Length: 126
Image 1 (tube, rainbow, N blue to C red):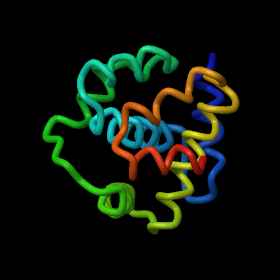
Image 2: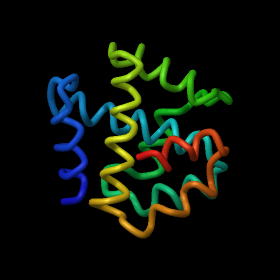
Image 3: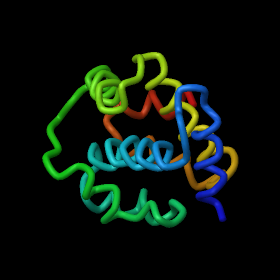
Image 4: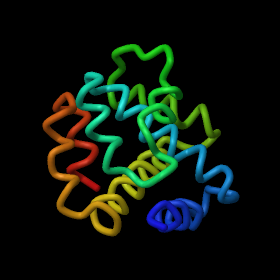
């Protein structure tokens, strides 16, 4: 299962205590990114993700979405999971690198078009 690959990569990070926490982190990160897209684009983005990363799951984590900067996202993620900002950046890079290289491969390039430029930069770096 493709999701297991992602779950294992995130759980292997030294600041992630277990797969349950890794699952919550993955959903939070991808939910933040889906929340930066208009609904139609978010549906396309989530359509290619492995189960259980569907539109309802990811947008459900972003009920009160506000326009935040990538820096604020990193700060919020750090607070949410009690990790340092550099760890939140590593988490984000690990998730998108794994999606781009191990799971979705060629399907990941269009994401950048759906995101504000400063958010797309976070994916380009992964």
